[in-house]
Length: 227
Image (cartoon, rainbow, N blue to C red):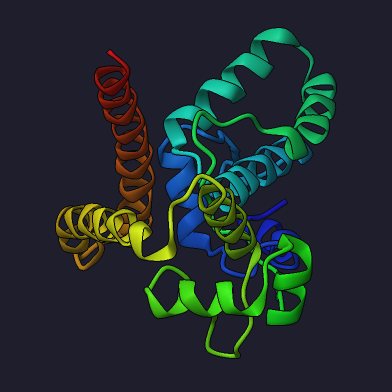
């Protein structure tokens, strides 16, 4: 298949994918399409499956390409045949195991559904919004990440932490996001093909490291409290 045909196949599930994105993933070694004598790329079914795996891991799990490549190498190492590798990619696509899972998950969750699914009352949701911890989208709907956030906030409330106490988490997150933006923004605004893709990949890598660092710091601090 040509790169245009691959793009048409992927667009239904990944509307934001572009030819530039596919070329970027090739330059990063995630796929290796053959080249026709004329120089044009020719993609196989296995190449398409690899692309689906990569795009799904980025969209649903927010994984850096380094981690995705390690998983692809593990799959390739476990099966030498192209057909078997394709089957492995298909079966693994919904079970990508990230070190850090904080990706943006889609969905349209109404306020009523959010309350029903999390078991909180309307006043609790209002308090989260008032303290800047929860915000609906432009159309007034929440997403799946909002559900997880409310569940976590409600669980902390059971330990006596009120919503106003959680502002510190929001302030910390905003500061970390600001640091990431300072690094990634110049790259995203740079000239050349794939500038935005490189910036997005950098954000994934830094964010994953940031969450890991935050977790270790909290663990160390908690040990200090217990001691």
